[in-house]
Length: 279
Image 1 (spheres, one colour):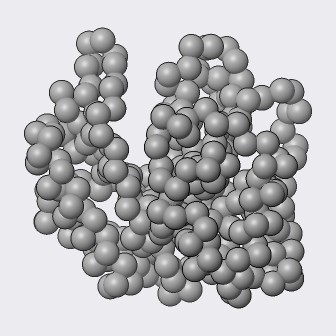
Image 2 (cartoon, rainbow, N blue to C red; image 1 turned 120 degrees about the horizontal axis):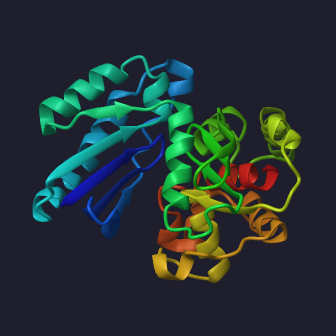
């Protein structure tokens, strides 16, 4: 069976087309695509996903619908996260998605988002009893999960993301030192609960746009190539070095220096790097 999964995030919208065999319990990814319509822009201030961002979202979904038809997909799963959880017009937009494409958009809770992120990361792991941590930095929220493939010891969705932190704190381009300090202090305050977790050695896996873009920067590639980026190790000093470089540049200079890999993230990548550093 060919299945398409569309992840409607606060900044990015991802499409995965995969071959699924329920009998063999196998999932083989065949194509992945991503676009950055940033539907959460201004949601924290107005409470609504704007008409402009809705139009950008539907432009992306139109393209994805064409790709889904090309690949003879039999089932489409649409999952919406933080922006849809908080937007007052979320139900209206999900109705429009159904009317336009026949897809049921499922708005999931922060807890479910954390759980699914962990399962998606832990699925290929063979060590059933090894503790793993997963970090998923999104546009409007950040999920952190610690556990084994069969049991969670910590699972939480935090209300910080690359778009929300940028809109709330990083108003200058590039940001001032005061803006960076205030953003870092706020992130630390939100993440206080993590400090109380076990200090045993845990391998952390970071997923989504921020760490993959940082991995591209560290590896010196200007376009995203999955095979080159998977399993890249990012040490704290690596993250801080890139953060300091991003903090010294405006978004236009960031685009010039790093190329297509930062396209759609050039003005929010610093916020994501700051969140990852503080974690």
